[in-house]
Amino acid sequence: MYEIMYYFQNKMAPDSEKRQISFPHLYYPVNRDKLPKLPSQWLNGKKKHDGAEDLWRIHDGLYDLTTFISTHPGGPYWLTCTKGTDVTEVFETHHLKGIAEQLLPKYFVRKAATPRNSPFTFENDGFYKTLKSKVMKNMHIIPKDERKKSDTIVTYLLMAFIILSPLCCWVTPDSLLLGATLIVLNGYVLSALVCCGHNYSHRADSWRMYLMNLSGMGNDEWRISHVLSHHTHTNTVNDVELSMLEPLLQYLPLRDKPIWAQMGAFYWPVIYSFAFLNGLIKESVAAITKFEGKSLTWVYIIPFILPTWMWLAGGLPLLWTLAIWQVTNVVASFFFVFFGLTAGHHAHTNFFEGDILGRNIWIGVYINWIQ
Image 1: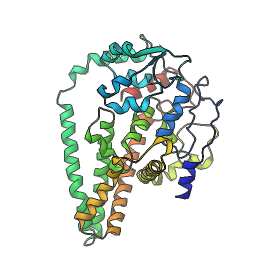
Image 2 (image 1 turned 135 degrees about the vertical axis):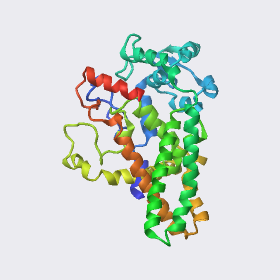
Image 3 (image 1 turned 90 degrees about the vertical axis):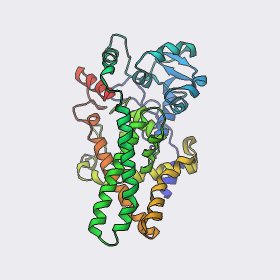
Image 4 (image 1 turned 180 degrees about the vertical axis):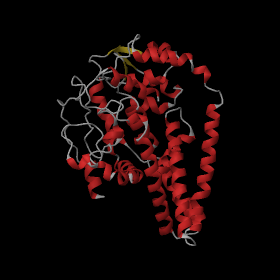
């Protein structure tokens, strides 16, 4: 705990001259290597290189979207948290129908004074915009009830989880084998619920996005690390999901990678299994210490709803209940991170920071955006 507090209280000056490897003309993220490596650190550091001047930057224009925050169809959080940053990538990839482009001139303030710190240009005749227009022409083939089906599946999963959680506590004293089986099953269901919460985190605000918080990870931080960072800067130094695993797991193909990091295949299950607990501790300490402007809110109660329910309905003493809760979390963490880090986004054939740029690599980057 003292080491964690040290990380939060001691700040290192960033190297302003450090550059990216694959894109040497671009600045290296200010807070990327700074402990405790929270997504909010990345976002706050991004402001120093984006040239948004406490406004919202889209391409080379600066916009004041303050009056639009409360009416933003995707919810107020996206605009509130990105103020002072370049949001070109998320603007282009999340607005498909052309409505946002028509509204944008109303909020224009002035031209940006610095070039964008990004390799993406989004030219009208370029690959991405061409692909985007073709996708829009085929949106009508998606069945209209698909979202309703997703909502129903999530509801059933949540009901199963509510039943299984105390059931694990009831069964374990009488049969360790059956109890262990139910705990693993419950952990798998929890990982599925977190996956569902991840899906809803990409969309407009809804209660289902808070299923992510059952794991101990915060939905707000997840929206930064996964949606704003990973999906828009996949496998680059701006991908917070990779930097948070370092130095234990190093996915980027760097020449100076130490031998123990190259041996990550032997110990990755341990890292995966404790990712949820690590997130719970770091984010809770950050909120308590008000690190990077964070503060305690009602959402920090959500992770503790599960052990409370297990204790009240499961019939076991508190310490045994907490033990079963954490084993459930370890199982869920393993499955969730395993699925996430073996998905197509991280396939070895995709682009990673340190690779030499080429036609196939650029196609891989764009494909990540539409997955």
